[in-house]
Amino acid sequence: MKKPIIILIISLLFNCENKTLNKELDALRSENTELKQTVEKANTSKQITTFLTFQNQDAEQAMNFYVSLFENSKITEVNRYESEGPAPEGSIMMARFELNGSQYACSDSYIKHEWNFTPGVSNFIDCISKEEQEFLFTKLSENGKVLMPLGNYGFSQQFAFIEDQFGVSWQLNLD
Image (tube, rainbow, N blue to C red):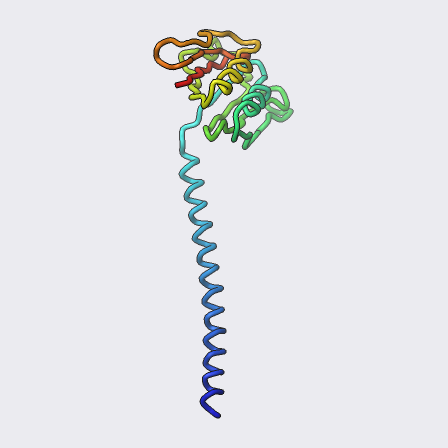
């Protein structure tokens, strides 16, 4: 009779110890996941970000417009000038947003510069479909300038070059 009781006691001890080990293993797995996320965040914070300087206090309007056009887009951070700041209260000191995974930052410059956006630097969009390209062409050219209308220029199936209402340039390509 002693053997079954001893086996039962050993089995219970082993199960208790096994549960403790499982809890410790789960805690280690959780810590490992947190460390991986921290490293990933540190790596992405060092990437190159396109920065747009708006001079007409329309950074927020532009940012909201762009985020509304592209899937998988969002505003991630907004810092505003306060009443004591050098710029109008509530204007964008620095904001960050994503357009389909690409990082952007912007601000409302309270200093009027002699320069503004130029078509020499533009956002190049590889459109997935003709419908997407036509949608973006219509939205981005509204109140802007068409620098090259939709057409076949020999280097792609269909292409357009636009300066939007905020002065930012976009190339829309369809292979």
